[in-house]
Amino acid sequence: MANVVVVGAQFGDEGKAKVTDLLAMNADMVVRYQGGANAGHTVVVGNETYKFHLIPSGIVYKGKQCILGPGMVIDPKAFLTEMQALLDRGLDDSNLKMSTAAHVTMPYHLMIDAAEEESRGDKKIGTTKRGIGPTYADKCARTGIRVEDLLNPAVLQEKLEWMVPRKNVLFERMYNLPQLDVKQILEEYLEYGKKIKKYVCDTSALIFEAVGDRKNILFEGAQGTLLDLDHGTYPYVTSSSPSAGGACVGAGIGPTIVDRVIGVSKAYMTRVGEGYFPTELFGEEGDRIREIGAEVGVTTGRPRRCGWFDAVLGRYAVRINGLDCLAITKMDVLDSFDEIQVCVEYRNKETGKVYKDLPSIGAMFAQMEPVYKTLKGWKQSTVECRKFSDLPDAAQKYLEFIEQELDAPIAIVSVGPKRDNTIIIEDPIHGPKRVLSKAVPA
Ligand code: GDP
Ligand code: IMO
Ligand code: MG
Image (cartoon, rainbow, N blue to C red; front, side, top):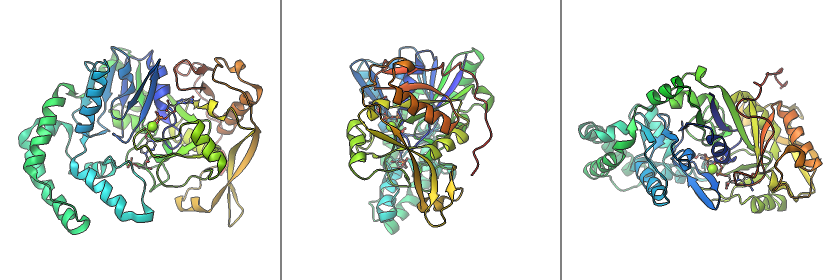
């Protein structure tokens, strides 16, 4: 029995779904605990490619319980569309459950997300425009609509009659957007309520029961550590808690339930949307990574910004998530490079001071430049490698270097999008617990 959290250790899109899918083979339950339709999780099974947004990737297996937890924000229209497309491809929804307490993304959230981005001009966050920020904002303001409300016409009507006129004032005076109609929204969302009713329950109780039955539970993180509302590169973050601690709050479990935390990182780095990215490459090398790695956003189709692996951010992710081990994905994308850089520290351009750890004041990011260590490329394909010893010498050295810099063991290396494009170095679930060494000096 082991309950495992899979988190993104970078800016999202690290290949969390591939790793979750691998581990789900031996799991009984897969739980999404935060985020919403902003996520884009790709799983390749044989010749089939699935792209999930709201639905846990465990749905590709028959008989695994899949849960949309209370910490998520759910756009019911997007959910029903995604589910229908999966049903059409022969997948089964009989083990899918959705929390009563998850918050609902309403049409006004989508409109506000787009309008706020527009009004920020060159200070925009580059959101996915899936209404994530405004839905979580209403949740925090205690004015949100929860999944359970879609099943209760009187409650939904009362909430909408209070909320919609307030949003209409904003639309008229701030955003120059058309007015919304309570009755129309009420009818549409009660209809969604009828369609999702069969999935809705107290998912925290289900998880607790599974824990009692010694089932294996996987918590599938969305987004990544550096996009975490509290611990990411604020304000260029999402509005939820993707880091490992978020799994407890977002799924409704105590921290004692979690046995292991696995951090997923690419062998390089990408980011979609705006915000700090010290190792970003603007020239030919960045384009090459983007092209070979097919680095295009799953949800928005935007090209991803690409750069070298950043060990400063990696160490930070180890700390924030208490990572037991790492899964390094997309090794194969670096196969043709003569040299590969790894950022080992930041240098303050003004003072010359070097930082091994993230500067504690976010605004200082703008003053930082990466200090690189250059490693030799391996210049041969890793796609067929299945054991660590199959990897070319320079690739082994590259991974060992990352391991040393982050002071965390690498358990999994991914060398392609398919399940079998994988090297298991040590058992990611039952391997030794990481012994935390002394913190890296700032
Ligand atoms: P997630 O959001 O973290 O689940 O990651 P995404 O699905 O957004 O992006 C990861 C992309 O990389 C997907 O297209 C995966 O199919 C692909 N991928 C995952 N692992 C590997 C790998 O080791 N090599 C290559 N070439 N592609 C990979
Ligand atoms: P997965 O789960 C990468 C980014 C957006 C934007 C910021 C805020 O596939 O890794 P939001 O719509 O959440 O308010 O946008 O966060 N972002 C992601 N980037 N992967 C994701 O999900 C992301 N979800 C949100 O691009 O910069
Ligand atoms: Mg993604």
